[in-house]
Amino acid sequence: MSGFKGQFEDLQQVIESIHVRHIAVYGLEACQPEETLGAVLARMEEYDIDIMPVASGAQPFTAYMMREGIKQLPQTAKVREVKHRPISVSDIVASETPLRQLVSLFQTHTQPWFFVLEGNRVEGIVTQGDLQKPAFRAYLFGLLSVLEVYLLDLIEEAYPNDEWRDLPSLPPKVWDKAEHEYGERKRRGEAPSSYAEVLGLGDKLQILRHSPAWLEPLGIKAAELDLSLSSPKDWLQELYQVRNNIAHADDLVKRIKGRWRHLYWLTERLEALVSKLQGFGPEGGGV
Image 1 (cartoon, rainbow, N blue to C red):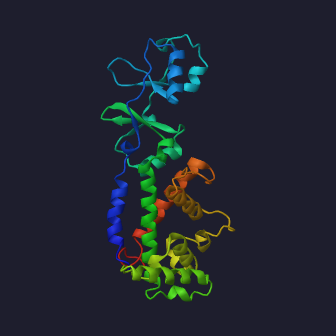
Image 2: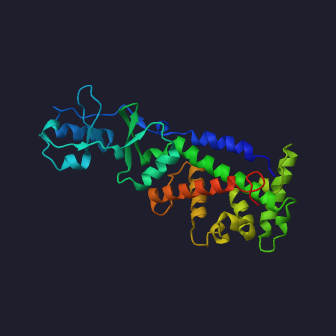
Image 3: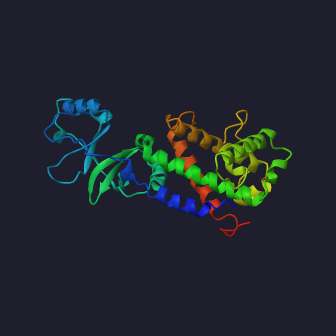
């Protein structure tokens, strides 16, 4: 075994400590009761915001207005003269909500945003665009790193002496790459636990794709691990694309079908797979 599993369970605890407050926007612009809708719309366009809470003196925000809705109303009318949308419980998340839970909430919420509650007051807002920020990227990249280490544990349990190199259907270049990188790390004074350790996520997935007997207890089909460009896109291949997007500071949903809602679905599947791997092997009571 690599011995990293316990250390990465600590990392997973760090990942799960990333909350909504790490990506939310605070210091909300609010529309005033005596302000004209034209003035409110001008501010929304100046700051490029679509939602603005309605101020009520020192009282907590209880209503809001949308940019598209304001456009349909007389621009000379005052905020207090028109109907506002009430802030409902379903429009709010607490600032300490884990990002893992936020992803699930975005899956079902009709709007791509939530007001953020600090104590008993709405103090901020979080939109799906805020998931482009470093904190959510760190969350996703951390999950992918945990996945990679758990995959390594699985490979080293299945092939304790790197017997995977003899898999007849595995492309020879995978072993050649491992041999080269292993030698390079040894020369640098590093001590990899196995040849599989020095391989990237894609190559680890390839090894496991050719080891279906080890995948069945996890409910994974070998075809799901095919990252070849000629194969139909599956969820792990798309996660691989998300990882590349993070590494190159690209748009998270670049080349991801279905954009945000599909990314939420991918993230939940990643979390479920990591959870399965946690309970797999000698440390977790599995095979």
